[in-house]
Length: 116
Image 1 (tube, rainbow, N blue to C red):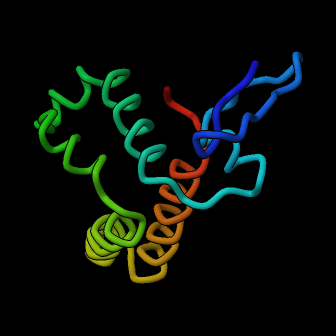
Image 2 (tube, rainbow, N blue to C red):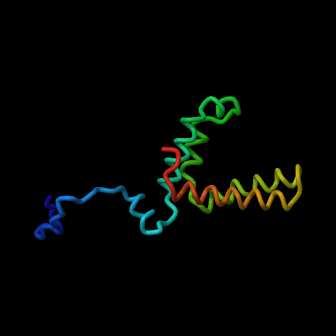
Image 3 (tube, rainbow, N blue to C red):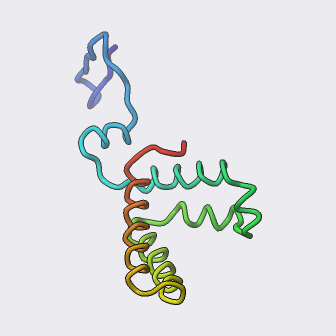
């Protein structure tokens, strides 16, 4: 297979090459957090759990809004809510542990193809 690079240079690929997605390449390279991968995972969760979300009153527009969050915004929004809830229910330490767990989950969903 030949691809034109820069208009004049031809890039010749070996016959046994394999096309991989950008997210897979980042994963192989140790990858950074990807908002696209996070969005796809959130959409995958919502498609698998649509009945549960509707019972909780969570709308598709709310899910779409969450899917557009950056890492910092997602951790901040979810972390603060969880810390507040745990402070009322189970104490500050439990809230901090839960917030750290949410941060790790958001990080994992932004780096790994899980729900799609």
